[in-house]
Amino acid sequence: MAGIKLPPAEDTADLPQQPRTPVTGDLISDDDRSVAADSWSIKSEYGSTLDDEQRHADATEALAAANLRPSSDYSSDKDSEKDAEDGDGIASMLGLQSYWDATYTDELQNFREHGHAGEIWFGPEVMDTVVSWTKSLCIDIYRRRLLNYTGDDKTEHDNHAVHDLSSWSVLDLGTGNGVLLQELAKHGFSDLTGVDYSEGAINLARGLAERDGFKNIAFSVDDVLDTKLDRQFQLVMDKGTLDAIGLHPDGPIKRLMYWDSVAKLVAPGGILVVTSCNSTKDELVQEVDRFNQRSTVQPESQDGQTSAPFQYIDHIRSYPTFMFGGVEGSRVATAAFLRN
Ligand SMILES: C[S@@+](CC[C@H](N)C(=O)[O-])C[C@H]1O[C@@H](n2cnc3c(N)ncnc32)[C@H](O)[C@@H]1O
Image (cartoon, rainbow, N blue to C red; front, top):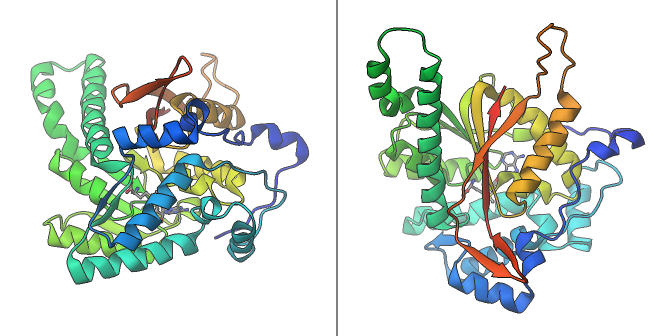
């Protein structure tokens, strides 16, 4: 991965804030957390061995509970691996490619030997919710654009709203086993691409897609932070990848790189849908606001329009929530942003 130098001290205000203990950690004690986790499991695992199950349970808990520490310098993955082992343990390990390579080596073997699909991060309920909500959002956007359509044949356009999904180019960042893309395909999307920096993930995703009859989904090995993709997409999905990136020992810097990169990947007028268990919806919106402030070009035109890259549109409100200490929280947040 390409290295960058830390920005000068005065720029550090732009760094994403160190994620405070995530929402669940704020709201519940360890004991309460296990009760909440019992009532609504954050992850689902499709057929790993028991050892794997325990490892993934630990990893998911770490993904949800990790507290980042500030980075003093950008370091190589080798240094970071040592830091992660010395310091934050599995939480930081989840930010390292070596962790994911090892995970997908196991999952690929499980797939080849037993046909198991591997992990659906945050569970199938969340995935289903994300997919149907995203589909409605796309249809809604299409219809709203129709309101600005000046041609005669509005009815025909309206009828096409659902079918129009096939014209949305979709990119899934950090696709893992690629099952999210399979679900999007079942809902009518057909121009689908998944990337992951782990070759094992891409081999698993390809194997599953081929087995399950989704031969049209394109998969490639690509690092989101140093992407080789040379096209833009109208819909960009991220489920758990920004979380993983933020868990790198240089997480705050990596998150800055993430937004720079994603802003190039989402086509103007396109949308980004981020699902996280490590940031609340408000924290995602604040992070995007900080990125906007960093990136906004002052208007030269007379209409006074600024060109902030992203604009918050909506978030999923239907995730199961629980109350603790008079505060309501949910374990996962999904927010959508429009690329201006
Ligand atoms: C928590 S898993 C989520 C996998 C998948 N999105 C899902 O929801 O099942 C995070 C994924 O992000 C990938 N990943 C992490 N950092 C990445 C990067 N910089 N570029 C590409 N993929 C990355 C990991 O290999 C892993 O597959």
